[in-house]
Image 1 (tube, helix red, strand yellow):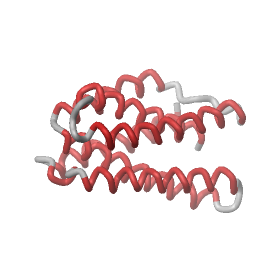
Image 2 (image 1 turned 30 degrees about the vertical axis):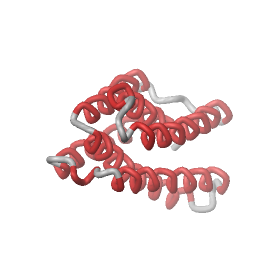
Image 3 (image 1 turned 180 degrees about the vertical axis):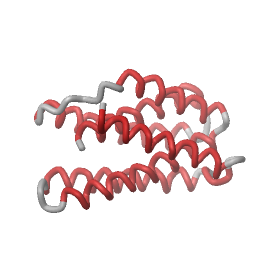
Image 4 (image 1 turned 90 degrees about the vertical axis):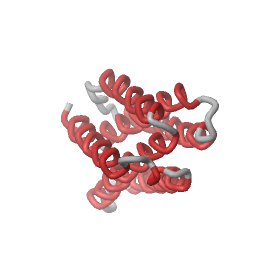
Length: 162
């Protein structure tokens, strides 16, 4: 769980890095910066857990480094609402992922479960922020969202295994 969560937070940081490289002075830059700062705090916590619990990070970190940045930059190049649509799609998959983790954890690791629940709430706030900034108004939104969700699910599946 820690390996895949760390990989996901790393990917999220890289997505926002790519978006901010393109949208640095756009209206969406402020909300993106705030969401990125939360993702960086999440990543720092998972990095610490990887070290504390001696979890092997995913071997795919170099892939997520470039893929996350590319996804962020590409959606930002499509426009501010497309960047926000990317956030909605990713966060909806993460919500589903964290929900399943919490169910699987039960009472086995209350401290970790509390952290996952807190991060899940942050991710849902990011989704709501992106929706409030016009994500659903993106031309081709259903197709873009479906593609990003499929990629996110694949990244989760791969990171649990490699």
